[in-house]
Image (cartoon, rainbow, N blue to C red; front, top):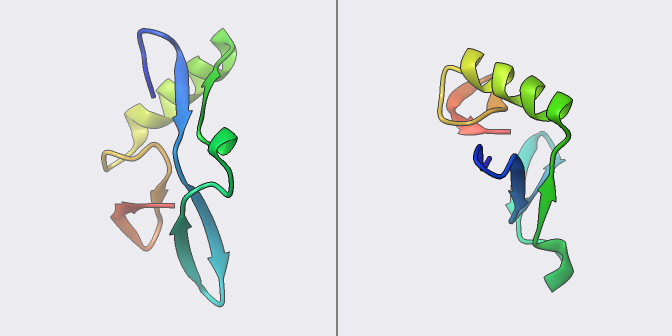
Length: 68
């Protein structure tokens, strides 16, 4: 999350398949993108990040050192 720009950069996909998380790259070049957040969405993600016990905004509940 870029706090200065209030944006997120999408660089990968995470899927849940057969009981495990699988990380992959987007299917196309246009899948890698920057998303600008509304003030409300930015504030909500900022609050979630402050409560996180890891570097990830959405940490894995079974292993907080990993993302979801």
